[in-house]
Image (cartoon, rainbow, N blue to C red; front, top):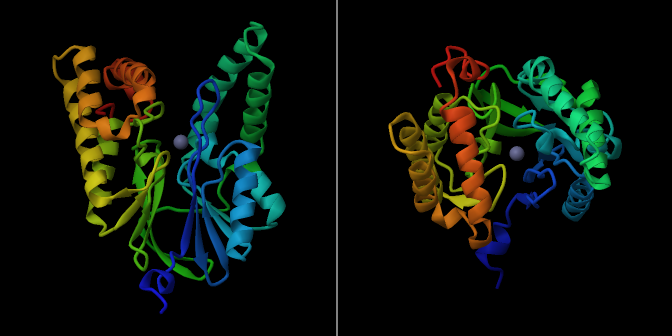
Length: 306
Ligand SMILES: [Zn+2]
């Protein structure tokens, strides 16, 4: 007897990213079957991740037909060039937010990285990673989308129908997430990061609103930008932890109390071995973003209200 699970074999594959200490992360990637090939959501950063993507495409028996970048961070776009070398001429679908990064975030992070290399404190493998990131920043043909997502709406990609959502001023100035109604699958990029929201380029209140939009989609499975896939209930618990963190930082509680609150609310998403790292990251984001001076907040929130 053929079981239902075989008949309903998933039309998608998750290629998990990585988040090793002292190394830039790779975001999660998802390959989704489409009539014209595979839709690849995000391309990771390191060559080892792109090798896994190419192997996963082979296992599905189809070429990659289109790339969707959820956002411009290099742990999601850094492999665009490698994937297009393997699958030539495929479109890159994404928001235009990278144009803002090219004027602001990238020059700032490049200056900091060059100073770090000049200091002699960077080990050789880190220097190699920085150089690779810089090359990705300079490779505009593979960094900028060939097809710009300008609004939320239905979109056919490689012959498959998706709801493509654009969230302005959330984790970045333009985050794209996909909802596949057939699979009841949401692929949301860094609007959800299991271990801790990465707030480096965030507008927190815009991000809060984006999470409310995600919850409106009737997904069964949600693939975050980093970490394991979630069901609806897990997403709702993560969202509550996120909202509580923003509320805590807005109030008069100490930074330590806000960190403790996150670790309590998001306990299921924090491996025991990561407690110290998460504590450091949440504390950093409270200082550098959630409680930043209005001028600093205005970098990522148009009205400085975030
Ligand atoms: Zn990421």
